[in-house]
Amino acid sequence: MTDAAPPPIRLLLADVDGTLVTNDKALTERAIAAVHKLHDVGIAFAVTSGRPPRGMTMLSGPLAFSTPIAGFNGGIFVKPDLTILETHALPPSVPLRVIEAIEAHGLDAWVYRGNDWLIRKKDAPHVAREAWTVKFEPTVVPNFDDVLDNVVKIVGVTDDRDRMDKCVLDVQKQFGRQVSAACSQPYYLDVTHPNANKGAVVTWMSQHLNIPPEQIATIGDQPSDTLMFDKSGLSIAMGNASDQVKRDAKRVTDSNQDEGFAKAVEMFILPASSR
Image 1 (cartoon, rainbow, N blue to C red):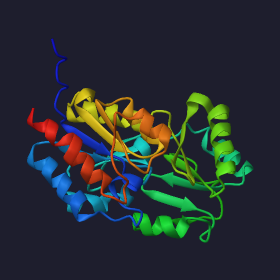
Image 2 (image 1 turned 90 degrees about the vertical axis):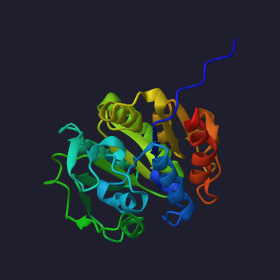
Image 3 (image 1 turned 30 degrees about the vertical axis):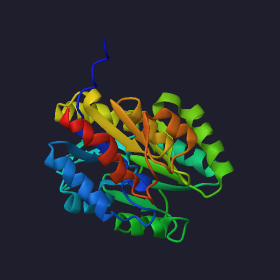
């Protein structure tokens, strides 16, 4: 007696940076074609990222998806036209303390509220690169004193891996279940509502689109993506992911610089659609 075949995939949920796009933040023609092939066989496609929703709307045109966008790792869900569907803001007592903890480790702090990105130093590390990536400019404020209500995400930024590792552990220990704290990139620590993580995104998409989790495939490259791996029926790690992320996935594809996303769709998703 053979094991029953797994149910067909009905939704592919993809991380963006390091997964769907190249290091130059570009969609390749092959990646675009792969998503259109998903549409052709009736498989939905959605994206989730630590990016703000405005930083992902440029994807909906070439990829022709109409599913909700999960910004800030699930801190906010919007329609492709940025109509807000649901928001998970940090508890009011948390943002100031998180900023203080981040800065105690020498990291810069960014604050996100709704669709706004707030910073204090225009020339701080990664600001210019992030603005180019998300295709909009941040708002510079003298301090965060008057903008700490309805905060959806706080980001700690540094290129010092030792500082980052220590900061992540400290924030996780200090705030426990009050927040979700994980790196979306080696240089970004994302701090969001405890229900704003990529595992919760899978659950939300499952309920919103009426698709069982076992019929959802997920693909990503960062430790924060393993939370959605745990909740989905099929998980795929990018070739540029760490060894630990690869171990947490059921499948591994090539890197985002070598058409890893498109290859994953072609090798692991589309063949199963004909079952």
